[in-house]
Length: 132
Image 1 (spheres, rainbow, N blue to C red):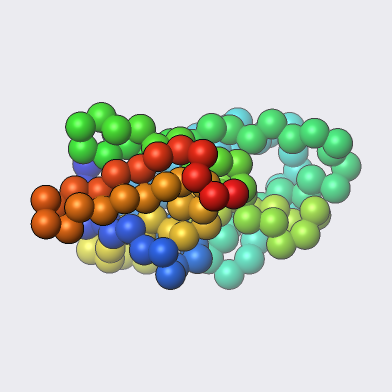
Image 2 (cartoon, rainbow, N blue to C red):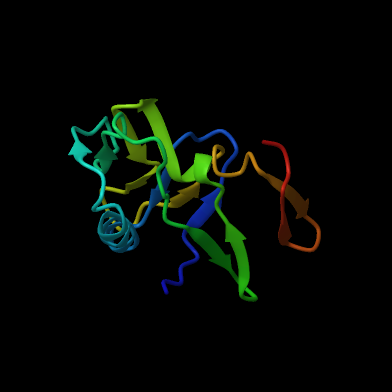
């Protein structure tokens, strides 16, 4: 588990950006779970891509974000993979180039969530099964 205060939630950013150590751990664990699928060339920012063209069904590893108070926000499969084409589907996360850059929780992973903010109280809440 990683703890940081250097992350933001942004509905305008497309690719979730993680601190380098966090991304490295996620990528390693994801690749271990996806060994049944052939890797293919990456896209700009995305280095963990697969050719799924020969598969009728794909088992996507589960990914969740955890926030203060042990709040789990499960990521819907469409927020885990970015599909450029069936022969090039990529892990929808990227590592920042330097550790001091902000982590960014992107909009595509928020699409299936209801996001509520209490600006005055300094709190943010998530509900699953929002828009899809």
